[in-house]
Length: 572
Image (cartoon, rainbow, N blue to C red; front, side, top):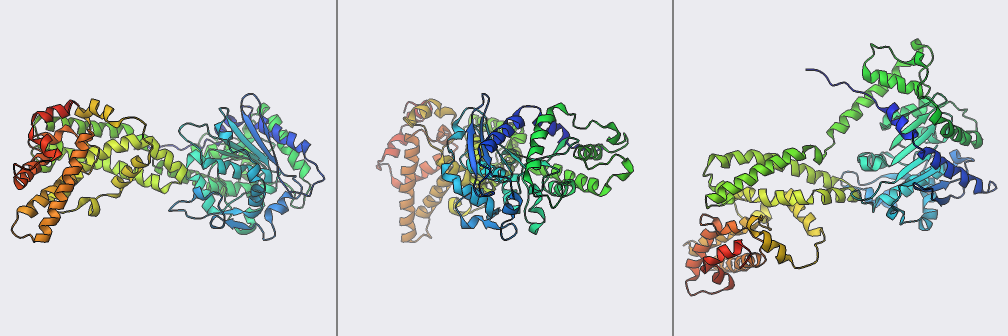
């Protein structure tokens, strides 16, 4: 078997992000805000922001006076954290699997100091939104971007892009996991870091708990390259720093980013071919060596290459590629799901032609096709169980978009397949499926549907028009039928107490009203009227119990066989 070759796309991604004018526009906004800010202010004592409106986008720039940003980011406690459990910001990032995370205290304080001044309606703008900042201003830009994601509609809105220049790390592994786990969020962050800037590196060695998220564009005099793996980013941030540890003057570092943005479009990412790897080098390692050359880590002489850092980077790239493969993506199996659903639709049609209905055909195993359908059921159930579990694990915003996107398919699946699971359940002699046997993913799929706003208007109109082809709205309908059949046996059996019989009567009256309510709203499939169906079996037993003189809304409907055809045509 041929092994799949891995490649690292960091150079291509770097070329992509620097080719438009996005970086230039973001840095221009920061530079203009820099000019407007008084240099007499207390260093990093406050944060400024301003909205710019070029023709092709909206830019919100954040700025803190760079002097001593390094010391301010560290705080009095060497990079103090604030736990998410102690404040109301960013609670939406917490999940069942990741219930808590921490944020750098100085960055959070700067963000909260201007939170109520920040524009909250920028996401409604039709133009792309760029949020940017330098140094601690970049930290505030990142936090503001995160705050916007709480109400972000991933299905309709354009994602904001946060571009930071020389921003320190702002959170722990919990924050990194909350963001990095979902490409829709992590792709909103691009962090530009110069090899001469100490600020992005200042919190790495503090306690070992600060972690990066998003894409990092590491740059040097030779060029730049993008990296996404958090561990690789940490290693390279430490390895690429070329500045003087004692240099506290922020102006040269600030100017470095201006020069980089100005010159980058005129540079070739890796222009010295003497640093390129030999042809015999494996593709992934060759890509990594080329990337490291672009950010200044591969020296002019090949024999001086730091094999250790190349090997580490290669290992992390492989882990990153594997983790991306393991991420559940519902769309990748969508065609397969459609095929299995089509098989079940055909099965349903064939059973209807036999005057029995697909529920009872499967329940009674009257044909080999009833066994074949089990394969379709298993595949579909595995798919939807995994999708529901994934949506439940995700933060509320991301999970909500997933639920909305797949709600229609999930509802069809539930209404088609759950009756077959109900048949299996009662075939084993069990009782009370709804309270004791119903799988969690059916409950969640129904809950999502109930939480979705319903369109205004008369619901019966569309139901009447399509009643001949609908699936029964309540996917637990057949569980109610089976319980009604059990109640009939309790009433007619000799071993039941008076209390049990009275309870059975009450249950039957309740089921009668329930069934009539569904029929009145055209919410049940006409297949229930087929002579071989369990529902008709129940009705015949119930009619004997109640006697011919019994009259109710349901009995009036059921006693006239012509009503069955009228119901199927929506003319009842």
